[in-house]
Length: 120
Image (cartoon, one colour):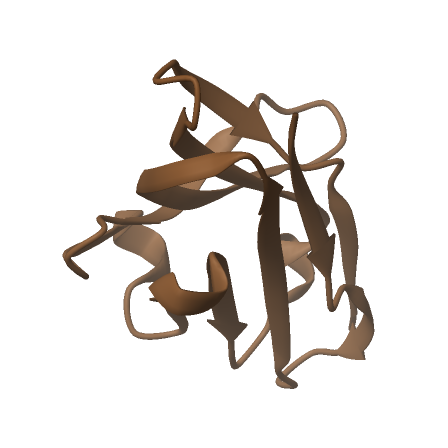
């Protein structure tokens, strides 16, 4: 079994910063892409940022410069550093990973989500 466990969400004032972490565990052979998505109430889930195993990153256009995605392959962990947070960044943030297990099966995995609330 593979699990993604997120941490680091919480309540922050506008202009503040938060760092999210997501650790993958289980019978993992290799992790390909890792990403962060978010979903605000009444909205669809949207991509925040994605990072390849080699470190290539892609961001949602309106988040470039404020959010930074990174990963530690040795720890099977992806991070999201969020700065200059705005109330509209309030959402549940989900971790995603494309993983090949020790049984040589590729699959997509999601974390349980972590709430980020930005107060004005």
